[in-house]
Image (cartoon, rainbow, N blue to C red; front, side, top):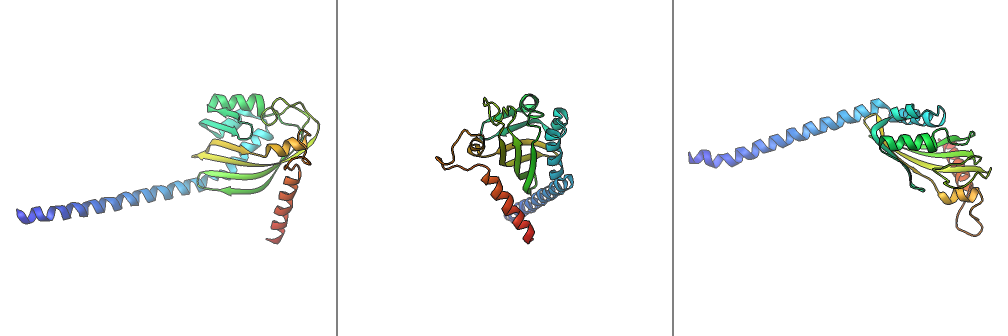
Length: 207
């Protein structure tokens, strides 16, 4: 009896060790399975479909189908966007989808794809010939050309967009529409995009 009692702690330790190894193995298998699933889903293609519905199709319903049940969109410089399904639909329908200048186009500079996130570095080109509520709220059209670098961080939940964080330099756009004077402030306008495009093309030519 005494011998059995002396062995019990060792046996418990061995069982605990085996259990921990099994738990780690299961967790690793789940991670591998999740990573393979994310790769199979091609998050970049979902990103592209989402943007196409916004800028080409001008289809709010199709855009929302690429998103999770309760997503959010945040335009970081202006704090404008939508939170939750109803909030995002309202933002898209009244302030974004189909509300951009007709000559708007986007050029991708780079893309980084992770397990559940895609980050795009973009240049947006447009003529400020209509109100752009989310970017320039309260500012009437100036008719000026704008070339604006953006960074879009798109987070996924499974194969659906969970949220978007959109970044740009507000001083850059204000300088281009004549509301800031670059000669009097440490800001730059279209030169930002021009430098990015030039460096990107030079890098591709060397590859």
